[in-house]
Image (tube, rainbow, N blue to C red; front, top):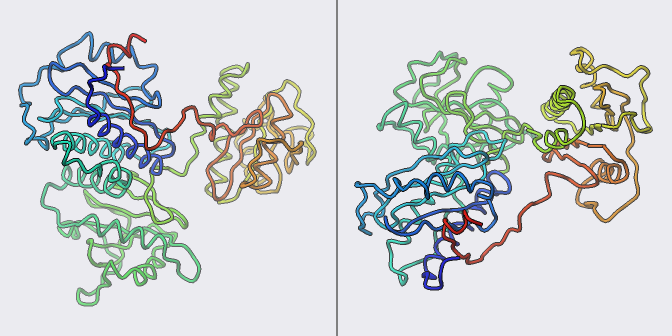
Length: 480
């Protein structure tokens, strides 16, 4: 730790931002740690605050970037002037494995770089990078003020920054593709998308695509139906727009808006820039030119792709004694089954039995087992997944049974908030070695269960909320 003369004001600023940033990103992307390195002046020591060990394992890289190399201390464009706290010279993402980062130079904080986790299931890194970019601005602003003027609002603002981060990323892309004179106002559009996502029509959640285009690009669209200007429904009339979405449900057509009103219905030909809300029932995706920006559900934006990446499963398989080729095929088979189940919105349970002789499980035993390496067999097994009970897949990449019942004795690791499928998997894996169970729920994330533990829900760090953290010198930390 640095000596006791470190100002408590700086520690408080850093801690407030880290806590707000971590809390906000956790709601947006799942459990997210955060960290920061900074130097107040060109000749100041580089300081670090990493309360949850996010940067652990990257010590050699930081040593190379900031200790062995001192070029970062030279930036003639930066003047030590607190009044110029908003004039930030950006430092882009460092590209470190498993991390996203953004930093900058300013008159109040010579150098700073903020970090968070790069989750494997992000629609786009853009909103998260905009989030980190705003953390840079907030820290520069806070240290430009005297301690007596500090409000402590930065952490609270970053906690609720999701919509702003999505908006900032869209604006960045819009300016790059359209220029600075677009007439689309993004905040009202985002509000409309969230309201539409929660508006049911005769009990059904919205499906279909709403295309938002700049008025200058309307002529590039291939309209099937065009509404007269004087009777165009306004975008803020959510109930009316929700009814109009029925006209493009489960089709390649788009309902078109200029950000204010509904212009008509067009084919799937897109202009050079467009913003699309792709409603898929309980959730949907926001896209720029067919590229996903984020998802939305339950009245809020998030980063999830709603497609399980199953990173934990891959790690467990790699730790097994199976050949790499067998691991590849088993993982590919399970991912295909999981994604199919998610797309069809039905739950399923998949037992991956890594024993040389598959364990006996009561259910519909197959003789001979089905070879899942054959595409037509895998396609048939996707239908078997709809039947109540589990699929039993062996290390030989064959299906040994379906509609299997997983039994086991009750133990303290159960989660009474979850259903029978989930808790049966916990019990079964607690009593059988070399078994991994993947549970797909229709309304929850995919769970990977091994040895009676939900691997995804285990947390490797102790979250400390509302704490004021100590700062460390980077050279001391690297030497630990």
